[in-house]
Each structure stands twice: as structure tokens, then as C-alpha cells.
Image (cartoon, rainbow, N blue to C red; front, side):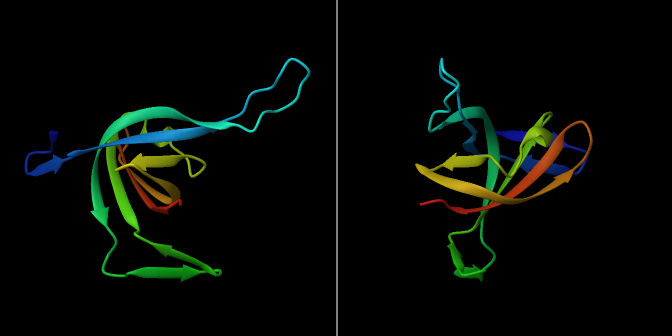
Amino acid sequence: MTRYCKATEVLTYNDLIIIQEYTQARGDYGEVDNGTWATYKSVWAEVVDGTGVEDFQSDMDIYSDIKTFKIHSPDASSVTTKMRISYDSRFFEIISMKREGRLFTTLTAIAFDDE
């Protein structure tokens, strides 16, 4: 999908991603279930691989296959780091975000493979 933004800038979002949120429900007696990941929203994105670094190590966690997901959506500001991204039959945990704009927010989520 191609969107045009400003007079000289062309935004190309060719990859469909699914943003998921973790939900928990309470039973009849107030007990909390284990919870599940549910689809929050499907959006078109530009997916960018990590910037030449094979592995990134921080606090004893090794992150590989780091990707940046750029989306352009009026409600992108409602996405949080408590959500995750489903892309290419894999799951990515959102670890940071950068928001730009006002009405149509561009969100950049840097995520790592959640397996």
C-alpha cells in the first residue's frame, strides 16, 4: 500500500502486521484466567531490519533479529509497549516506540523475536 504524505514524500507500507494485546478475564467467582493474546488492530507497515548489528545484549538478554515497524494510523498513539506484533508467522515484543505527528501518528516500534 502506498500513501502520499506532503508534496515530495512517498510512504510505502507493503507488509500487513497484527498488533496484539494481552487480555485476561475474570470467572464467575472472581478468579483470573491465564489470559490470551487478542488482535487489537491489523495495519499496513514498513518493516526495516536491524541496522547491521547481529545481536544486541542488554542486562543479560540477547536480542537478535531486531526489526523496526513503521505504521501510519490515526490511532497509532494508543499502541503501548505492553502489546506485541505478529508478523511473518512470528511474534515480536515492542521494546520502544517513537511517535511523530499529530493527527496521523507514525509509530516506530523496535521489537525482538519473542520466541
